[in-house]
Amino acid sequence: MRRILMACLPIPVLVAAAPSVPGPEVVVQRQIEAFNAHDLEAFLATFGEDLEMAALPGGPGSSSGKARLRELYGERFRRNPDLRATVLDRMVSGTFVIQRERISGRAGKAPLEATVIYQVKAGAIRRMWTLGD
Image (cartoon, rainbow, N blue to C red):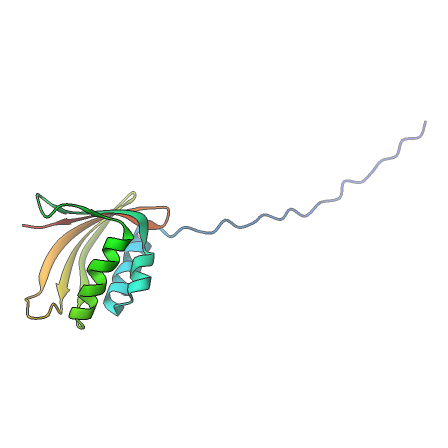
């Protein structure tokens, strides 16, 4: 009986590179840059469709969804052509980005400082809490 030995030839394996998901800090920074550019579509692209927003403590009722965000920020960008956010401090903890921001360019109003907590999952901001006095 004859034995035939077959050489094991390496077979190229094609591994599809999984699209990389940006980290929380990158997503929030993109949001700030789009905000400052008044690029509503790029700004909205950083948020998940299921976005939840709230002002804490005991601020106005919470809002949800990109449609509401489009309404709020579309109007703010139109009314405040010099609107700009400056990040004063930033801390990242897991899926959370906590930052102190200065918002300037609000027509007829003084700049304000706010602390904002963003929760980022799967490359999009899913929750956003604004802390006020």
